[in-house]
Image 1 (cartoon, rainbow, N blue to C red):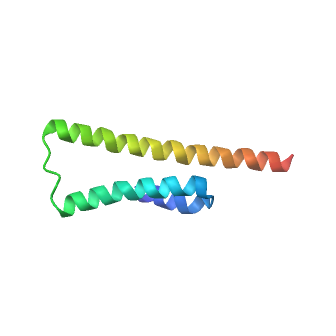
Image 2 (cartoon, one colour):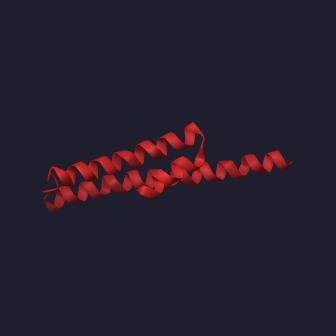
Image 3 (tube, rainbow, N blue to C red):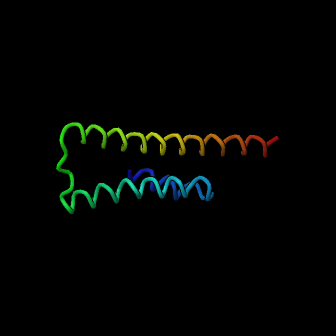
Length: 81
């Protein structure tokens, strides 16, 4: 999750960095607060649903970061021509 925060600072464009920063921050807040307040007392079904949700958010962050980097490469190629 910390890697996504680093990537969000790397991109410098608001449409690319804000979703990465907010998405990774939300995962960190849920994890830290859930551990601090001892809310992770799940049954196996609840744990499965929680992990599916977290993995969907992480997948979205990966897709956003990959789309942002490939978009930057296309812009650089257009500028060179």
